[in-house]
Amino acid sequence: DVKVTQSSRYLVKRTGEKVFLECVQDMDHENMFWYRQDPGLGLRLIYFSYDVKMKEKGDIPEGYSVSREKKERFSLILESASTNQTSMYLCASSPAGTGGYEQYFGPGTRLTVT
Amino acid sequence: AQSVTQLDSQVPVFEEAPVELRCNYSSSVSVYLFWYVQYPNQGLQLLLKYLSGSTLVESINGFEAEFNKSQTSFHLRKPSVHISDTAEYFCAVINTGGFKTIFGAGTRLFVKA
Image (cartoon, rainbow over all chains, first blue to last red; front, side, top):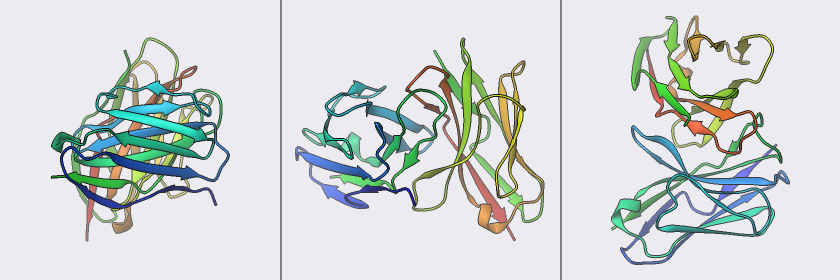
């Protein structure tokens, strides 16, 4: 059974803290993605990676960075958390190539920044 | 630029009634289309997808969607819903040669007894 896991389901951090969200997939997928999900806005792409050490900005990369040192792991970093980064964060993976492959999602991390 | 519009943010319906969740997209190139479902406290999972061929695609749990190129729509339907279908449904589109999937804002389906 394919699986994408995220390090935490719920996280509470203070403004200004550095926050790490970890995602691991066991499907040997080349592509990995980080989204944030907000009510009424759907999913918005923060960053994606199509190979180890490769990364591309998505639609809303400001305030975030990513790291992919190993194929199975994709980390999202909030350098200095702010209250407007309170959200649900979803990680996903898909096989190599473009277009028609479905994405497999983790359960999400609900981050609250106070 | 691509975009996806889900025309209803919430759809309440009684159990065993039919339902249609509407999705329209805009794109200047060929696309693949998806419906994902998110049950409470879970991530998204694929419900069905259109890549090519027959414009009517079906899921294993009774949902179907029809790709209408002229109307740029991909509406999701089910003839008789169950309480367990209560979830949020997301329509998504991607260029046939692209990496980036564009998601709609989601439609919350509430099935009432």
